[in-house]
Image (cartoon, rainbow, N blue to C red; front, side, top):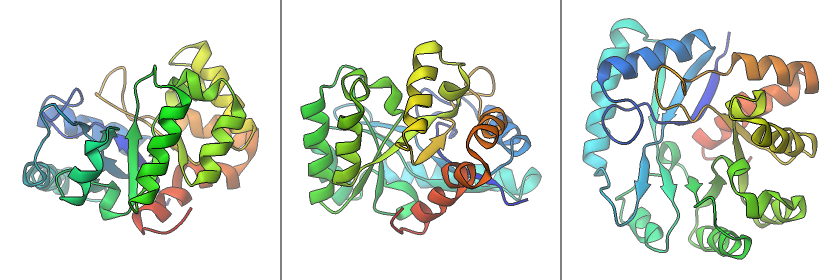
Length: 241
């Protein structure tokens, strides 16, 4: 079976609020494998103004994890990326190769404050696009000031942004509000990527099976495949979705 691709995961050990140890990282990969995931893009948090892992540190961590994976889960593929908290400084850091895009592509996984207003997010999307990158808005269901009006979501998509939502939100594990929002976005064809946003091998683990079953039943295999695999392939290949 060709596996799912997860582009949002805090799976590298000791870099952020995700996996705390190599043991936990490998446990997360084992869960992901059982859930049908075969490729993961690790996306540690990058907050400008805070402590940011250097690119050599990130590459070294990826290499150590890959070495461990080769012993037990050689089928798993690990790529590098980051969940970038948007600020004006992040573009400069990207251009200076201090923080990573997704799998060496032009795609950026971009996070905002849950209180960010729509004009600010729209301006951020414009700045990212002008500088030659393609923004993917991480867990968009959290941004009340954006998703309260679906026309606003449509507008940022028409500008050139893409939308990612969390699998746990769809199945209701993150509460009724996020479940309602994500299903409304799906119904209106305003989602491009579903990811785990996993942080551990316990509560926020990398699970997609239950979400995939719901999507297949509700929307069919083609749409499910697009949201869990095909669009992610295009990101890794640096192609337009």
